Length: 478
Ligand code: 4AD
Ligand code: MG
Image (tube, rainbow, N blue to C red):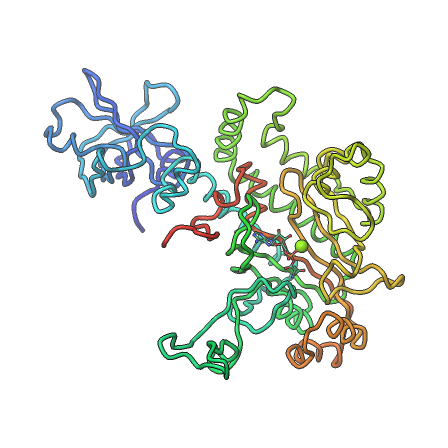
């Protein structure tokens, strides 16, 4: 089934074997005695070197072998004399599938800035950095499914088009079937978007949680893993308009069980990537070290693999929101008025506060719990004090919030009260409320922003560089 990939070939093909290579040229070097072609097919960070003799092929063919061109090479695997590789391919046949005019092809063998590469998102997977990021991203996605499958969870596909605003934050993309040439108008003549999806209001999902809860009330343990949309106009290195979220939801889990699962889950999937993406992570670590060379020693981050091992090997710090506020009130930046946003019980922690706790105070991942009810979503279970809810946020160094979750309110009356309090029409969530009328159960769940995880594991600095085709305000046209 198809040719041997370069990764397999480097791992297991014996010397002397006849091989077929198909891939894209990274570089070509010509010396008096040989022509060296470095070929990559994306299966690994490593190139394979293919060697031809001068005069072996017509000059018109060799001229077409430029960076970015796609080739088929037949040859035999031989021991390599060159540094950095044990084998190379002695070429017997060469076919150019597709040329890449060096005057026009934007990816030349030099270092391109990530900003530039963002503008050519259709070609950037062919760079070492993006190849590595995309392979790590794949490994993490695979590990997510494996983890939940092993633990008896069922993968539930929740809708992308929905009428619910699970987070109540109003950051939704509307879905419309209106004929915009002849849209229905209200009495004032404005377009009547009210009935836009075949007679109903609809939007792209901001979270699969509410539907996930329905699944958990039947299958006990489910998870979702799908595209999620937030119409927030934020131009940060941590936000996308379209991202992937993983949302497990578990019947009979209390907040403590939820925290234990979240911690075990992230540690396991990070561990999987460390074990299965060694070469790519080593490359990304080196890339980061080069990027940080200009910084003074004290400002440089830990080597990537050390940072990942630390997270996998050490327990996360767990404390309540109220305890965190006390720490912040007693902190140097607060006393010296260095925080941009003042600290006090009831505030929604901003990223400077979260980063102080994680990076300066505890120096490890932190799980914060029991936030004030006013700053959290309506579905979270009220604590006995009536002031806080059983929320949990997992905060990571360099990232901030990576997971948000909670125990859910399973009491019908309390949930209805919260729904009304925040101004949701109970008619719109009747199906959700019914789960609390028919066989309600204590349950919990959380959401992990997949790109924030990939960001952490790859050590990249901008969330736009860990998803193949990032969507953000004014993003690319395709
Ligand atoms: O904290 P959030 O908004 O929580 C929920 O949506 C819950 N319904 C989850 C649940 O309990 N099932 O989002 C969860 C996570 C955040 O911690 C963050 O990692 C990520 O989703 N996230 C984003 N990632 C990228 N771009 C954005 N605009 C994001 N908004 C949230
Ligand atoms: Mg959150």
